[in-house]
Length: 295
Length: 198
Image: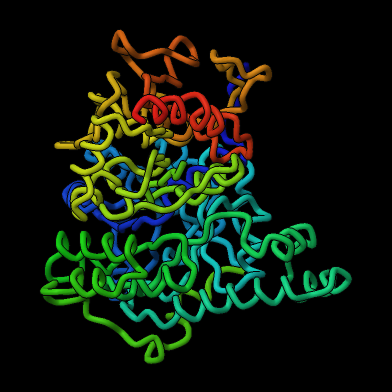
């Protein structure tokens, strides 16, 4: 009757429990409480939301452990935190703080421009960003237990999230249509392990939960992503950079559950006040596009 | 028998698939009209605060509470166990439950995600083979009332309990592909309870 921690089933299972929910970026205990009261399934503890990282520039790193612990003490829902791509020591620190999920995130400045973290070495599960199926499968091969489409964080522009969800979905549908003897070349083209490519071709879906992120700012954005096949939604700057965070947070939660009912989405969209000020992704110079980080 | 699965948030699809594998009609419940069609209800794994919040927002909370108290069979896994409990410890401020099951449940009792685990479980009511059970930020039962039976325990903490009409587990049988717990709910809890009502 041995109890085993950190198994694939336990790590991936945790993400299953978040499905149909909204995970919100928070920078302090007060925001975390607002998120929990609004019905968030989890919070992402970070020092600066992506919009501020973008505005202020500089190197963005893991958050201060004190700040993460204050947030953990203030809410009963899961608390996630971000480590830089490839920064396995930041990840070890976050695991020692007992965070519930680590986001190896392109929103922070990468620490390694070739390798990601070997996530199999950890008990805590990881979520990683992806812009296409090959990238998603490479992260899963490294041990990611959850994937989020990247979008373009801190913009309030949903177009990249849309593009990445369409891309991942389209590539999965294409795999399902291939003959078995064509999957070897498909794996080569996707730059992903054959075993995972074969599994996706057979099941027609990723072997882990797929959330979406990056630019979601309104209830209708959240519902759009659910309609595109996302299992749930990350909202970063969209809530606490808006005029009325508590109300917008609750509205996005509602629209995520009833994404297929325009009346509910309409009601949720009423009188929310100002949305975050957006930036068109097209106006961002290429070096400032976070979604291009990750290899 | 038609079994509704509360589909506000969480792994409701996995529960529906397990029910279908048991040969039962399963459908999603998000609204009161849908609840009215259900002979029995499953409350899935997920975030208990979120599910309770959404149930209140969409005006189905009282209807579920009322159906459960008037004898509708229900099964809750993990968050579902919390939502069926009459009393919870370590709750979020103001957190409400549907109640009906005379137990006291401690939320996240086994710890945070790094403490989540799987293990083999002996199930009291006659599964010949042990059950592979997955616990994720799982609650345990701290006290049971006189009419509640303990079906399985981990380190002397009850993790599966039942009353005449209600079943609750700290773990997630919907994640393992082993459908015996759902079959048990259908055959040993829901069907006998519904027979008595008729």
